[in-house]
Length: 90
Image 1: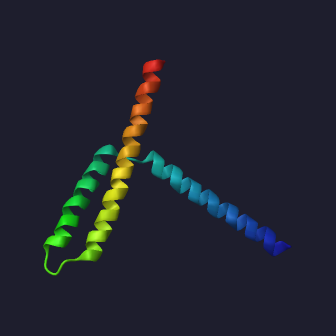
Image 2: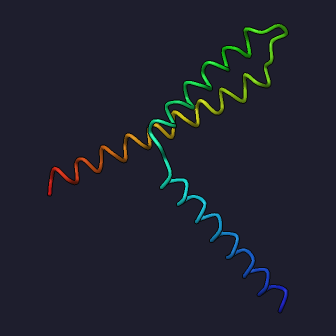
């Protein structure tokens, strides 16, 4: 019985930490930095295929990072659009 209750406490604590990380990530989106990182990833994804021998692992990493940055950029723009709409209605 004691082990189960402690296990439930650990799961709850891990969930709280995960939730804090997600909220921190949402609060710390920077538009200029997101654009810079997206551009950086696009350039170096191209570079990974331009070198000899082609570095497909590096290419894959940069494509994934580019996708993540574009998603963050969308979230950033969507947030500021919703803020503008809220302020214009008030």
